[in-house]
Structure formats: C-alpha cells, structure tokens
Length: 147
Image 1: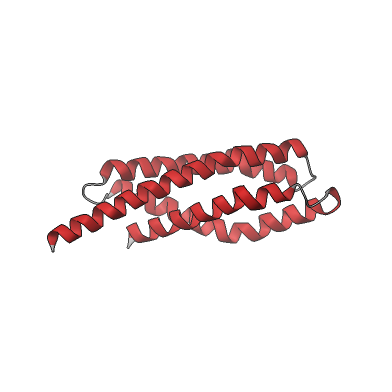
Image 2: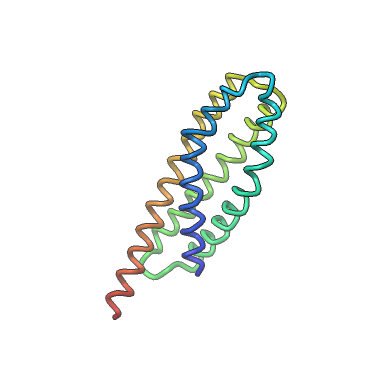
C-alpha cells in the first residue's frame, strides 16, 4: 500500500505540475496589475490544500520506501527519495519565496523567474514518475513470475 500511495501522489503531482507550468503560471501575466495580487493570493490559498497533502504523503512514503525498499528496487527508491528532497528544496527555497513576493505586488521579473524556475520541479516530478513506473513494473513482473 505504501508503494501505491507513493506512486499515486507522484503521478498526481506530475500531472498537476505540468498543468501549472504550461497553463496556470503563464496565464498569470494576463490577469492585469489591478487584479493580480488578489488573483495570486487566491491561487496560493486554493492550491495549497491540494498540493501540500500530496507532497507530504509523497515525502513520507518515499522516505519509508528508501528505508524499507521493495526487493529489487532499492537503488531506484533511493534515487526517488533524493528527487523528492530536491523537489521540496526547490519548492521552499525558490518557488514559495517568489509567490510571497507576488502576493504583495505583480513583478514581471519575479513572475518570469517563477515560470522558469518551475521547470526544475516539472523535470523532477517527471523523472519521479519514470522512477515510480519502473518500480511498479518491476514489482508486477516479479509478482507475475511467482504465479
């Protein structure tokens, strides 16, 4: 169940980050200065209850799986846990501070930095999805071999 919870959160976050990267963040520049702060504040308030539980479960299950890995997938799960660490670092040292600035006023430079720096998370979550697919395929193939 831990593996499935981890995979679910990773896949959900991967889909969400691609949506944010290609749709949500680029469209922020179209809101207009007059409405931007209210829009950004609503974005942060509304996205957090979706993202934070998924990220937290992904972190906890990744640590668990790195500590007690599924047989045959030890190194992949360690890589996956490392990717989660990088995701949290990027989120809280790069993107959250940029959102904090944008919640005060629209700054085109900060907005551009947000869109560009978010590619870090987009690539990392895509890599995590690939890792989790590999682990799930390995587990399924091992189970099929036991049948």
